[in-house]
Amino acid sequence: MADRFDAGRIPRHVAARFRDPMPERMAAFDRYLCDMGRESERATVLGRLARDRRQIIPWLSRTRDLRGARIIEIGCGLGASTVALAEQGADLLAIDVAGEDVEAARKLTKAHDVGAKFVVANAAEIDEIVQPGDANWIIFWAVLEHMTIRERLQSLSRAWQTLSPGGLLTVVETPNRLWHFDSHTSLLPFFDWLPDELAFEYSRYSPRASFCSAFRQRSEEDMLRFLRRGRGMSFHELELAIAPVQDLDIASAYQLERRARNPARRLGWALSRAGRYEAMLRKTASTVPRALLQPFHYFTARKG
Image (cartoon, rainbow, N blue to C red; front, side, top):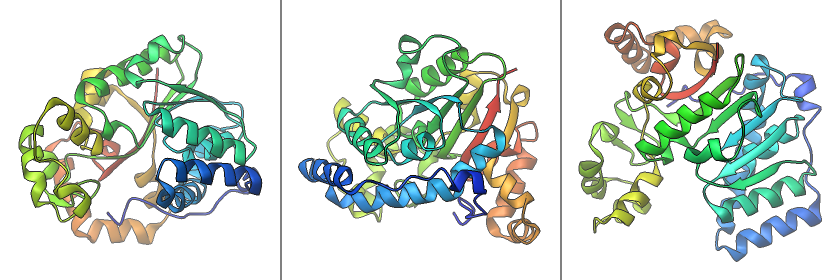
């Protein structure tokens, strides 16, 4: 989707906090990726770090200064977003279910000489990791789409309960199942609309070579691997886990904000096929906040 990202202008105080990696420590990160057989992911990690610095961090900073914020990052992956948050001065706890990814993230933050605490855990168990009030900001960073429905509901609900009034909950880069084309996982139309079992079987028609032949024998283990590849989310999970969405205080929405800041982009979106599709969604679901009808979820909700 053309509307996913916007370079924008990086505020000086944000750019001043960027850290260059130390070569000898970066070499340790590279060796670790090689040992895992994932050296090809190095460019992706560094590309994500550059993107996060240029686009996501300025957006988050316009809602609340990251310096001193007590943040729980859910879904740290190999550490690109962790570095981007930590170098801004956040007091950061990073969580991921994959232990080898957490170790890579630890090495990447060390290479950039920034601090973060790490926990290997399922986000559905967040209430066993932190106490209410420990964090004033919880960020689900490109991770909800890789959870089962049960995990999504539990992690969202327990994260919301962990926040004190005024705390923030942010979702970054999760595809919206209400949109008709799955650009995240299968590259197929209507794929996120299919029940999981049917989508599993239909995955063989994906044009993505690494996906179309991966799931042929259905077992519980294979179904979990399939779900971990990524399935869209919609406002329905938020309503079940937190509250009716019309009652949520949406403090910020990245895609709406960038259009508001650029009249030409706003007009182009309104005239585009995607913009017309969004208009149809808004008419159909008139009580749902517009932030939750975008192609990908990039929003921050403030707890009352």
